[in-house]
Image 1 (cartoon, each protein chain N blue to C red):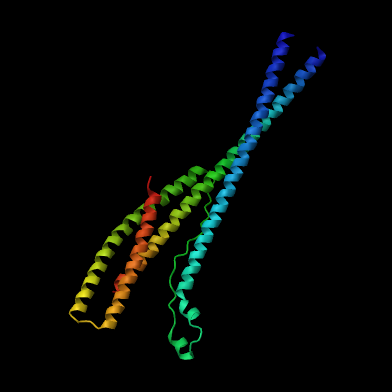
Image 2: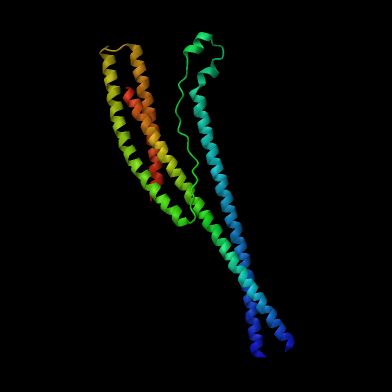
Length: 182
Length: 69
């Protein structure tokens, strides 16, 4: 009789533990669902931000028409805004079945990004040197009056555009460095 | 004694059922965790890939602008 009682107590303990475990797993499941929802909402906001950026760039590409609605037929024919190339991020879908596979792909992409970042870093330095030289030569030409004012401003505009592009590249390289840093 | 045996049997069945449920719940929770982990890793990988594309694109742009000088 005593053994029976002991067994019954043990079984009761087992049942209680089981119940506890079930509730723990239910809570864990809820947490996982919440994390998934958070991930999805984050991705949506990121995509929304990117779309906004693309829209802004598109608006910048064609501001002349919007700002000056009363243009003559001739002017419309002459002013053809060049389509500005904008980098559009892609939504890539991977077909990983395990986290190990996903990690392997990530490692591979990380290596590729590191190499690209290193190359781009060198490119930034080279571009800065070239731009500084071009600016110096331009100023010299201006001082020596070898160049007309219109040509000077045209070249200066080009240099400034290139400098802006180099700044953008530097920022992107910085992001890449942060992402590949361990 | 008979009622004791019945109670013992019922409890044993209940314990078995609970353990089976626990096993299933464990598997499901593990699968959900794995899926969430894969999604997290893949989103970072996608950001990396897009950043690489953006760098390549900007490098091309810089090259073109410098060549125009």
